[in-house]
Length: 136
Image 1 (cartoon, rainbow, N blue to C red):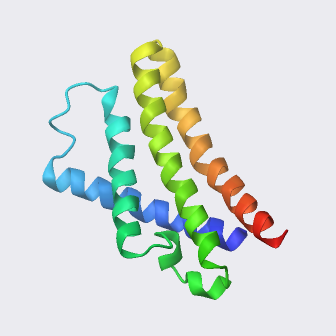
Image 2 (image 1 turned 90 degrees about the vertical axis):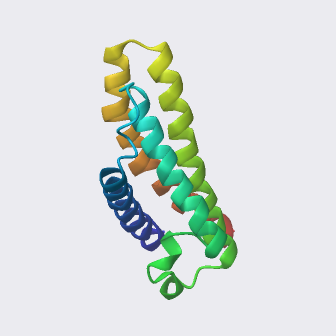
């Protein structure tokens, strides 16, 4: 479980750097005038990166980082990959909804605490769920 989680953390760190570099170099986020939409589009870019990597490596982006050493089944990696992609899609949808419905203060609290908590705990639960589910 912890091995899968640490590989997730490494992959998300790398994808954050990739999206930040691409958006800075190509000016992807400069065309957006609405500040509320910036995190939504940012998570959408990361979801697109994970989905495109899944087309090449069906076990997911976290598997690329020495995933063979964990000796988990293909199904475990595919399930974790699905959980991570669904996390980013959920962040996109929730960010859009909260940004348009809630007040600025609630949106700021969600952006700072809600998204961070989801990025840390959701994949931890997902790795635990995948490893426990396959052992049973």
